[in-house]
Length: 245
Image (tube, rainbow, N blue to C red):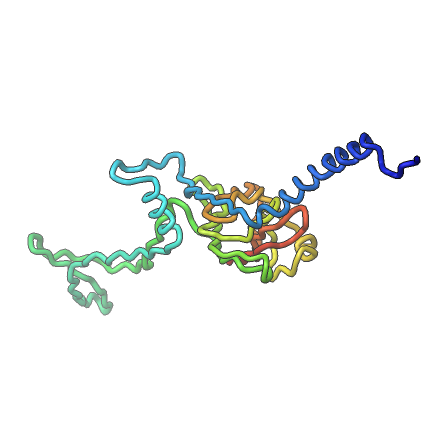
């Protein structure tokens, strides 16, 4: 009697082949989908200059907070004008001409006659800034109803002249292979606009929740319009943006 049943060894081979194919497919699916359900939290401190000294009665976190506040605050410097002695003016007539002189009286000295000299008003220049300086900042915005982002983005110049992008208390929709980009435009209208405008890649996003720093290349010229983009590289999708001003 002829049997239409597949021999056992053939069925076994098919099962093994199916498992071999399924493993990489499942792994790829997990790589794509797991970030949507798993958050990566990062709490990176603000970079403190190498020459900075932390006082004994302060922690590094307290120093960081003070530096951040100082970098974001413009403090005007006001200096009072020094008091000048009272001047007495006398007029002397000599041979048909008139000369004007002033006398400065002090308690211990006799009045002295001093010729009036015109001087230009002096100006007090503000002191050079020390520590980190905030050059531009902005807030993360949702790209759409699914790809969302919130938190502050600040471009800082450090005391040694280097520059960093600081992501402060952000929360972004997670995804596979997210990168932090800078592009010289505002009003970014998707991936085609990004490719047309050009960008510099600061590296992979360290975490979709928390605070983190990214070094700006030393030769990068800051444009008049600057936007930070968190971008999914394999699928070319903009997740969130922040226009820095």
